[in-house]
Amino acid sequence: MGDSTPPDMTQISDSELLQSTSVSTMLSGNPYFPNTPELIELRTRARTHLFNFNTTTSPVIRTQCLTSLLDICPSSFTPSSFPYIEPPFRCDYGKFISFGPNCYLNFDCVFLDCNKIEFGSDCMLGPGVHIYTVNHPLNAEERLTKNEVTKKVTIGNNVWIGGRAVILPGVTIGDNAVIGASAVVSRDVAANTLVAGVPAKFIKNLDQ
Image 1: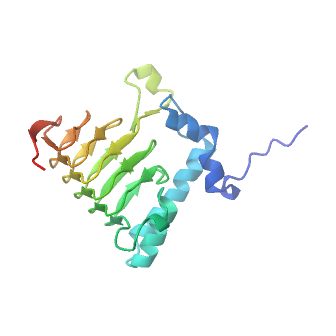
Image 2: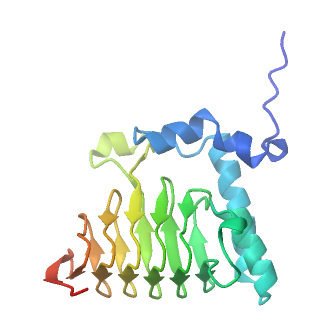
Image 3: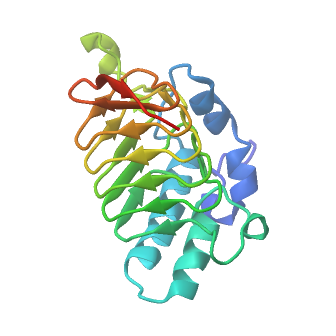
């Protein structure tokens, strides 16, 4: 009989885990099961980085934690343009979150990054902004399978998202857009526009 001992996930590198079938299925937008060994291990590693980030006051350690957690390359930033995130910050994986230069996140932001969350440059997020890429089936029987589906969220350059706003799966927000505080954004937002409300609706065009 062959050895049926499951592999020790703690000995597998991040890059190998990220190339697993579990991850590719999750990112594909097709239904996937979130509690495979590979996905559990990636979430466990993210929680370690988040704990260290949220419990230190050292700017150096915070930068190190974010470099390990997120999909960012430090050499792409100057010291002053590196993403600035106020703790506490929460996310599922971290590895599917990317930022352009000069982005700022206020306290208590939560990102469910089961698919990619991509920011352009010069974005600002108020306190308590939530961004979700994952959803559960509406059908009750399908929901019992515990399968999930994901859609990418894309945020352009110079976007301002007000405090407590919620961005739902699949949304794209154009450059220079402003999202009002506590808005729930379920549809794409055009560049140079202001949206607000629940659900978020067009308020006006913004002058350049």
